[in-house]
Image (cartoon, rainbow, N blue to C red; front, side):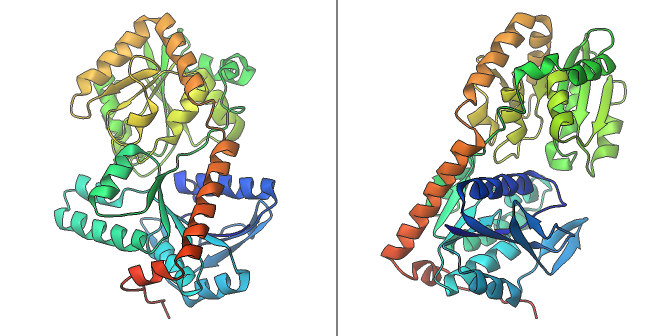
Length: 389
């Protein structure tokens, strides 16, 4: 199979979109397929997993590269002649990629990953919410199939009138994130640093950004016997540091690979605070590492956390529930262990290989759909994005 991946984000930018695209490319290489990547210009490597990476013009928005429509996209696709186009979290560049693919008769699979309307709603931009949904609907109606990561995302897109939806989650590295990591020397050393008095380590992993709402952890002020460990970096760091004054907290910065695995191994409880997640990849990683998870009853976490089995869900507007859940787990190490084991079991069927094979099935479904109704997505896309000149 020949797959063209058009991604709104790619290396060196590190986020959920980039991470999942890298895993898809690695799976395609393992299968012996062929692929290319088209991404915003940001200093990406010339290739990844043996596949060429093509950068197209971009502008910076809050230090984030935003890819622009360009005639180069269609030329790259025409030269490569893909069987299917994978549009990762499509916006401006992804929309243009879908349009160009339709002009070439290539089916597109759009992967919904970023809740742009949700961000606009959180910032009180009511007019922008309606506009964002119109853009999302326009982008995804051009694709043969849209993949959604959670039941909440599917309900949102169905409510916006977007059709041809299918569920596709994310995989997790079951070897790297494992309960045995707790016994690794690196994890033990980190734990000694985080909790020298044997305190319960309550951890978070992810971007430090406004939508992650890490300031909610201030509600844990005064809970005895805990230490917070925050892995990640981002623009909201000053606000989070200010909010957590007086709460014993260690900021570990950005960690990857074995260092990140050791950090999970040093934790006792995992807390996710944002209620705008379309999925919640770090929740899966925490479960794989054998940790109980506390998360909001909203968005992607609703599908990943099973209350009283492998963690707790709290109402986003009731942070007392967050505090209560942490206190219960602090007092009951046996419950932490039992929930951690259940969390590990819950992700055993979600290896990246299994999820990658599922994605191939979605590619094949889109290709069959296009072969049965040639050109249909083009007719559904009323207005095509004009390429920048």
